[in-house]
Length: 300
Image: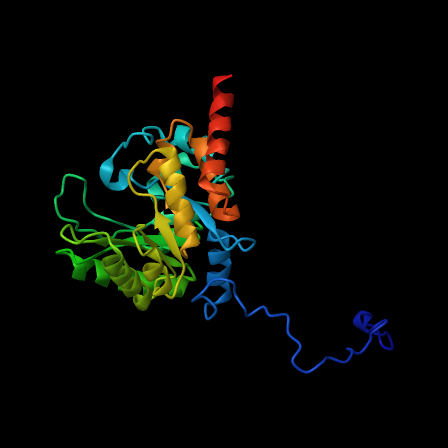
């Protein structure tokens, strides 16, 4: 700067005006329960998975092949994902499918399946952590998902793997989704699903995925972090919509649905109908018309 020349930043400089005591833009009041303490990166990734405008999400689960192989509807992943990815709020899948079958231009955030280690041929659930967090960072994922088996013979192993993932996730700023499962001898009822969901949250999960059941409010209200409903087995379309509707009415922030979408005879129509239920609380009898109308257009 030449001698006597004024700094450009001082040209037209004006002092700050008066500010009222207690003024705040409320940036700290994050919209998802149990997440206000998280760092900015964690909140930003959570906001990709669960949409800020509605506080809801429709996740598309297509990770079944990691233990089931070429499941019906997922034989050729590119063909399944191409028409659906643009409608999903989030994709849940494995790193192999992400690298081989998903366009880098896809805008849907990714929740990566990071547990495995067994196939459908194994009688007892015996999964563990099988993806390094460094690979999740390379893949730019918004979340990591691991299954915990409460009440199963390998409960201890899966919970220890989950604890390691929690530590790694917080170090990298990546939220963790716990996929809850219960032992074969335990009913999928509110008692056991609330137990497994609460254990996951107590250990540090940021989102919990669990099944719908009677008294679902007990599950959602005793879990201090957001819950998404697992889609489960293939149901008639109207029943799947009713289940999604009841889940969000009883406290879920959305669904992580797979077979009830990609095994539908009109997957695009079904995911559109599910989104209308989850984000806009459209009644199932009205939402089913979205599916039916889409199905009709395919026949024209």
